[in-house]
Image 1: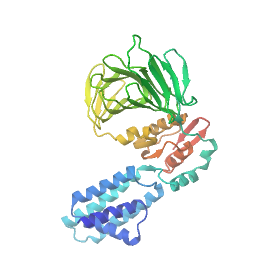
Image 2: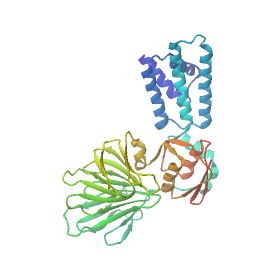
Image 3: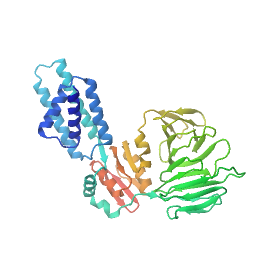
Image 4: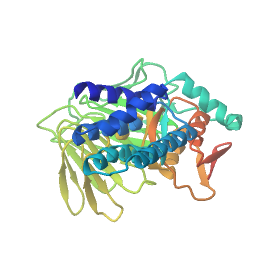
Length: 400
């Protein structure tokens, strides 16, 4: 049984990668038909689905169509060969049907992966007209506004100490990260700094208490140059990922719109863009309390609090954490995302405006680096055959 499972897993991977020989293809369907262990086969089908979502190579829509037709043909042959149906045989053919249905599900979404140079080459050849007016990806860009109102453009500032406010040194490290080095001596007047990223920008900062914050594009973080008193409080707009330094005596609080997130030491992400449907707080590690005007809830790792404009808050379990923090790691990650959700991310990162002509119902699964040009991302999206793009300066027109 174990050997069969290993063979099935290996053949499924080859099937996804288009490396099956005719003999191996026959063997794959034989193993599917002969599976008597429903749990074992379901595990393999789950692995197949997960590999499609996160690890599968880019596969063009036409190739998926061919796979679907092959699956249908196999099902037809199986049905014709079954002259005296029995419960056992029906169950075995059900596994073949399950595999075929899974393929149909997969074909309804676009597998978007940019793992090899081969994939990039495919994308470049698809729509060369997109490259006539291209956009470079965003980068480490931000403006720091000091307590006295003066501003520092961080992407053009040199490395080393940029300013000193009270007992706190503001340092730009060689990797571009902003560091606050504080002696932690409280002062009578609390001085605040404001870090702002433009569209097409991102930045990382280490706060005076050692907490780390990653700011996504079109976001801001307001914070004191030294944390004093019984709590550590900051304010954000847009999206930020936090890794909070532990301090049991001083909880860390994030104010965002009409919500407050309180932690002692944990990792979490907040997405509060105004063009999104809700403010989303996602917990990766530790424990946080999310408070609104009418209620408060505690989150466990893997949970997400969604605050609607109406003030209603909903807790969602088993959130895709990889998708949530992909931006911090330099990637776009889509989990059955509709075209408008995809384009909102592209608009912020490439600093473009988006307009639509017609209705597009396609959803997308997969990921691609945020370090590629806009034309490469759009070309790969066009591989679905369900969406087309025109770039006109800073404007993208999306069409079915």
